[in-house]
Image 1 (cartoon, rainbow, N blue to C red):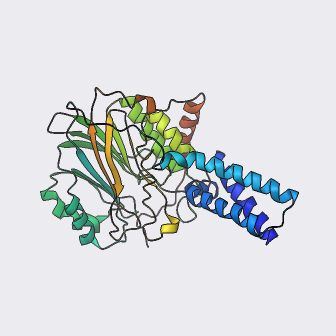
Image 2: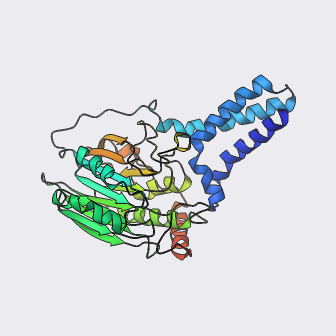
Image 3: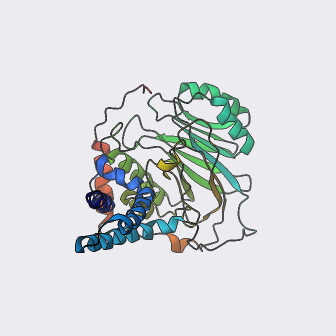
Length: 359
């Protein structure tokens, strides 16, 4: 038992420290995702140590190191719990009307199209974003066009297809920031009450043993969007399957570079993946916004056959309310150089993605 305890404790501490490095290989970046599970395991290991491990100098040193590691993780995760205080806000008369958005990775190989369409019909959001939507999904979703007359379609068979439907008039363009098979959508939306905002829809590839060997393309894609958001200086929302968690190194750089806010702070983890396994669930479908966007509700919707839950958001826009400006994180010294380097690495990274993905 003592040997198992020391091996497990060593692994957990290393799993906490490894993500602090700049290495982008999936074996390193993968530890970003499991911080919630890692913290739980550290708690159980500390408790188990007191119950079953013989007291010794090594034991007490290990317990202290484990406790320090757990405390570090908790200090990061606390922001994404409901215990973290956030200032309540009453909608002002000058705010836009509430706008609703549904974002869903539908899973290309999920053929339960009616189930997802019923979810859209039930919630009737103003904007619907789908990811991993291919030609089959394109055909199934044509019924939406009667209610959503404004749309942008990028059906692909490589699991990176994307569709955006809107009840609100919009103009759009499709970007390929780091690779010609990884689209992102930039939509300019104008509401009936005269408010304009830019919606960036993203879905970069994850670092994993079955997909991309490194996070270079993912990080390059996201940071390219971040730079564009900041350069444009417009009211913006960035949404999609980021294949990233909010506390990772690249997410922190993304927030600083885009000068946006993470609405999960104080609202809970709102984990979206994996929809079928509660013990392997991570908040990888993200939404970030500029300070003049105010989130009224952010939640997941029920299971619809995909490996992701859909993310539902209701928000307003108020250009005169600057109370959220203090939440914007500023770039630190050296960040600009790191960001430029990561974007360049993402563009240069060679991928062996298949044009037609198989399950």
